[in-house]
Image (cartoon, rainbow, N blue to C red; front, side, top):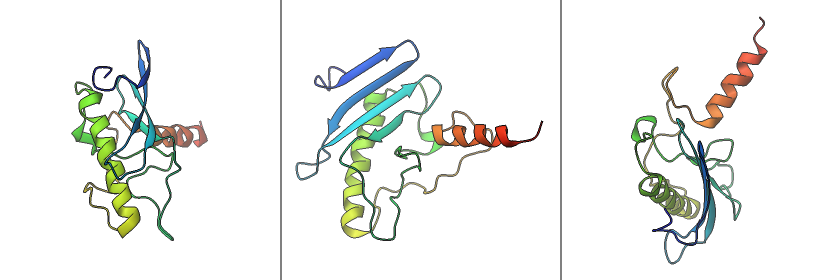
Length: 142
């Protein structure tokens, strides 16, 4: 990642990578500071740090989970043997371009499935699904 993005900041531990960089999808686009967090055994978690993403009047932003992370791929389109620099980073740039087009036109041209369908008990789960499952399990009587 450092070879392709020398100005990026990265924090690396044995089980987690946090990568921060500004992505500009096209020369006419805004600059978006993003943070990609990758934990072993989970999908990379991508957040736009600024400017705040805005929706269209009466519409929520497509392909954006309620916890603010981007929906970049279907469950079977990413695996832990793929390199984040060759998958998640370009997919993030593509998502941002499609977001800008959607903001201007109201049409999402990025394809995909929204909301995404997840198979029951499949792994890895996106962070939001895992959090909801934990909360639901805590509420169940013993």
